[in-house]
Image (cartoon, rainbow, N blue to C red; front, side):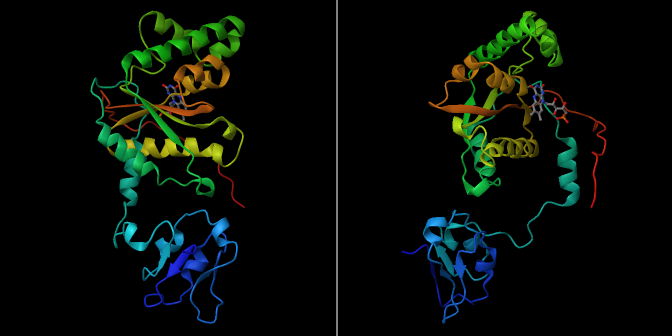
Length: 277
Ligand SMILES: Cc1cc2nc3c(=O)[nH]c(=O)nc-3n(C[C@H](O)[C@H](O)[C@H](O)COP(=O)(O)O)c2cc1C
């Protein structure tokens, strides 16, 4: 099978598939007028599926997916602007969780949804680790604290700039302000070599942002674990301690769980500077 086949009974030769292909890999100039892959199409196609997805008549079948494999887009789908505004405004960083785990099926569904996030060159490099063991989560928080103690000793100004003195003091009182004893700690990881590679590098934060918004819509609370991630960046034992596959790095980390408290108001956020040209 070539990169794609056309059902000539269904194809209306409107060229929408060709116009939608990100790399102009579909030729509409053949005598028959049906779409055909250009010579390098097979090699250069990134399998984004737009040609299948956009076809009005379901005439195009890619090697990897046909119209019947793809869920139809409902005619009047959509979230209203009011609903979206409400979701954005009421999402909060949640740091106090109920002692009740989110069922794995729900998390699995969320990861499936997040898999629809944009992905540079459709590379889909993000892998997930979900840590649910309370002892393990505490051990990782403890390691962040260990790093913070070292920072406070060696570079107190830097330590204070990230509130390490306060967080260490809280830890010594028996309170975890690093991973907040969350029922789930989710790590987006991938090969270390993507560390400085755009756009792959961006995908981890993007996937995590999608996850954060998706969980907010489902009554699950989330908070970015930035102190944890900082330790991954500055303290080599940290990444090792997570036990990721060889050569992998934790790119982003988030706490998840059901919120213990309900927020009553939307805090004020000023409009960021915008320039127009
Ligand atoms: C990249 C990133 C890292 C963060 N790291 C932490 C963290 O380690 N601990 C924490 O309590 N909150 C963390 N936060 C949450 C921010 O403090 C929070 O987004 C901010 O105070 C605004 O509150 P809101 O998210 O409820 O609007 C982080 C947020 C981002 C975007």
